[in-house]
Amino acid sequence: MGQLRVEKVQELMKQEISQIILRELKDPRIGFVTVTSVECTGDLREAKVYVSLMGNESQVKACWSGLNSSLGFIRREIGKRIRLRVTPELSFALDKSLDYSAHIQELLLKIKAEDEAKAKDSAPEE
Image 1 (cartoon, rainbow, N blue to C red):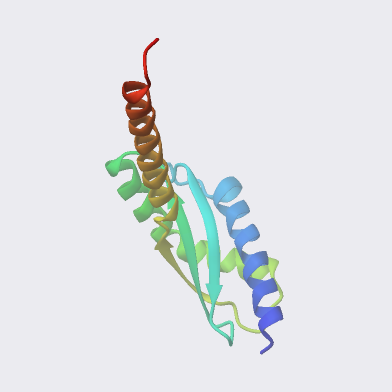
Image 2 (cartoon, one colour):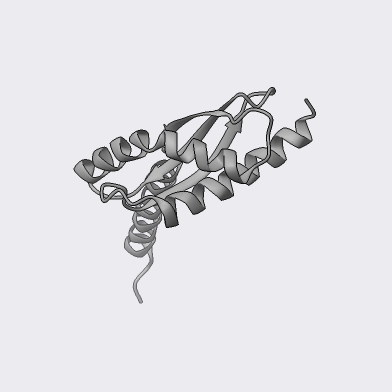
């Protein structure tokens, strides 16, 4: 199957899954969820949905279990919304890239503050 078609289906699935999670899931455990990307196999039979979850440790665990329990509903809705011969088998994967980028941002700010402190200490006083 053409790579361009797979990429278009991935993007469409990302948008539709985001809408389903935002508007149609009634599970109170599911809080702030961001669908970051979707990766499909070349034959479009399996799709891995990367999600980023916000909150403390217990909220993330509850949200994760809520998402996994709603996989069947999400797959059925995807099947209704996207005309494909076979609806892909969905699985969720946790996307840690946002946490990683926040960690890098903290490190950069810390280095900048240290550099400014060094520059201030070494500046000649008049």
